[in-house]
Image (cartoon, rainbow, N blue to C red; front, side, top):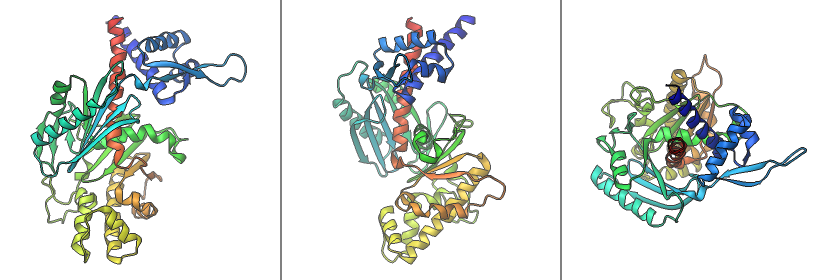
Amino acid sequence: MKITQTKDIRVANRWEIMRQVLAHSPISRAEIGRRTGLNKATVSTIVKEWIDAGLLAESQLGHSEGGRKPILLTPLYGAGCAVALDIDISRVQAILTDLSGESVLAREQFSTQGEDFLCVYDQVCQAVDRLLAQMPATRYGLVGMGVAVHGVVDLSGLIRFIPRRGWRNVDLRSLLEERYQVPVSLDNDGNLAALAQQELIGGMGELEQEPLQSLAMVNIGDSISVGLITNGEVFRGFPGFANAIGHHTINFDEPAQCSCGKYGCWEQYCSDGAVTAYANSVLPQPISSIQELASLIRRQDPIARQVLDRFITYLAVGLTNIIFIFDCQVIVISSELLSALPYYLPEILRKMILPITHAEKVVLSPLGKSGPILGAAHQAICQFFQDQANDAETNG
């Protein structure tokens, strides 16, 4: 038992040191020690292991107030590649990245409106194959895949339900692992957008000075999902459905049925499709996109402004519910409509009813619709480094 515990500690130390380098590079060994609490000998030994594995490099000399300048460490992002997928309700995006998860080497995108799972899966595989044909030669090759889906995913990575697609109990993760022979991480788009946003928080102006304890990432697109982070970890609930907040009821008098089978869901009022549908029910000329609606609002069209007011009202109701249930420190919103009209954010804050809570920060995400796919890439790459940390112990 003691040996197992010691092994687990060594694996955790390896991963923690790499995590610090990934988050703060270029970084010195001394700074890693200060951030992790590990002693100098442990840091030096583990850093050498990562260098020998071809995943870290000594890049440059750092600043010194006196004495020897520290040698700074950086990850070797070109040592491998990852594939990330974002399977939305009507389209699929696929990217090939290096180990930074941010440098996109190739990209694919295609529409999948109304198509069944096997048809979509076949198109996904074709897109991934095209990406891999463009993959440069690297030491580790394809290290893993990350997949974001806009639906309910359980703790095992099984797609339990995507209401708008009609998919139930789909094991896409296993299919991709069998075909490509690499680890595949699969999660809900809200969770992955939250992870991507968490990585970015340090560079978001007024937020960067505050330690982040909790975050709600509201991802609005063809559907609505909410990624919840507390103490640096995604809160998933039991058995993993905590982020299906787009289907909490905000109007008990709604006569139309939601795709999930309920009535009056938040998604029926604030998703892009719901907003566009309502706009087309009141505008004299139909629109085909959120950007067209935003253009009408900028031109002070009174009916378009009515559509915006309705969206803001229901969005504020949902955000208020999130705060009362989760009591989060920061709410980050990804919304095409609000990104096009960011000066309406204060109006949402005024409509949020918060008589007993403190003033939470509500901000727009600079990631936009890229959040889920960047989070998927990040998750796949982190899994690779964690596996390497474990393999070093096993092979040692």
